[in-house]
Length: 472
Image (cartoon, one colour):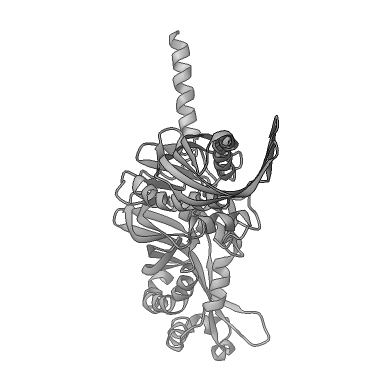
C-alpha cells in the first residue's frame, strides 16, 4: 500500500472520528446489576414455563393410537445463570435441572383402551440461550437474534414399555416452549422519543450497538431535548464524551453538558422561561420605593405626572441559558434584559430604563426513583445599564434588592418546576437507590444500585400492553 493510500485512510479515519456524535447520556450496567437481574430472570422464566399451554396432541402408529391433552408443568427445579457474553449480549443458561409434568392420556392399542393422568419428569435439563443485543434502525435497543439449544438427559414416568414412546415429544416441547418465551423479545425496551411536558420532549435513541464485556453492558444514547413545536431546531453536540471507569455499583448514568444545554435551549425556544417569569414577578414595596427614588429625575424629565403611577419590572431571558460542569460542581448562566416601566392607567407603559442582568446559578443534581431533578441556587448577580456606564454606577444600589427579589419570587418557582425531574431510560418498575452524584469536567456520573419495584413479568406485560409512563 502506497504512502498516499495510507495518508488518505488515516485522514478519513480522523474525519469519521470527528463527525461521530458523542452521547449526551451513557448508561453502564455492571455484573453486580446483572446479579440482581438474575433472580428476577429465573423467576420470570419459571413463571413463563409454568404457564405454557400445549394444544391437544394426537398420534397414530400402526395399531397404536394416543391422545395427550392438558399438559401442565407442576414443578420446576432450575439451576440457572445469567451473565454477559462479550461482544454479543447476554447468556442465560440452565444446567442439570428437572421439570415435572402432568397430563391426561387416552390410549388405544389393539383392543386395549386406557385413559387417565400421567406424572412424568424430565431430568438433566440443559438450556443454553444467547441474546444478541443491538440497536434497530430507529435507535431502540432490541434482541437481534436468539440462539437456543435445549436438551434432556433422562425422562421418567410411572410406567414404561411400549407406551413410553409417547414421551418422545417432551424434548421438542421444552425447546419450543423456551423459544416461545424468548421470541417475545424479553428485553427492557423503552421509548426512543417521548414528551417530557407540554414544552419539550427527549430523544433517548441509541447511537450505536451496545458494548458488552465480561463485566458490563455500556449503552450510548443521544440524550437530547427538543422543542415540541419545532422538533428539528436542536443544538449541535460539541460536548465531551463522558467516560465511565467505575464498576462498583449496579448501574452508572453519565450525562454531559449537552444533555442539560439541549434542555435549556429547548425550554427557551418553547417559551417556558417567559411563562415562569410572567407568573412569578411581583415587586416588593421597598424595591419599588428604591426604584422610584433612583429614577425620580428620569420621571420628572419625561412627565412629572408619571410620579403618581405604579412602577413595574419586565424581565426577559434573551438567550438560551448554558450549563458548566466542573469537578467543583455544576452551574447555569443566564442573561436577561430588565426594563423599568411606569404604568399609567389606560395608557401604554412608559420605559424608564433598560439594563442587562447576568445571573449564575449553582445547580445540584439529584435522583429519585429514575427521575433526574435539578435544584438551582442564585449565587452571582450583576446588572449593567444599556444606556451608559454612568447609569451602571447608579444601578449598584439596586443589585442587592433585585437579587433578593429573584431569590424570593422567581427561583422557588423554577425549582418547583424542575423538581418534577426527567425520566432516564430505564423501564417502569426499576428504580435507582443509594445513588451518588460525581462531578467531572464536562459531565456528571450518577452511580447507584437498582431496585425492582415490580417483578420482571409485570414490567414486560405492561410494556407489551402499552401501559408505559410517557411523562418522562
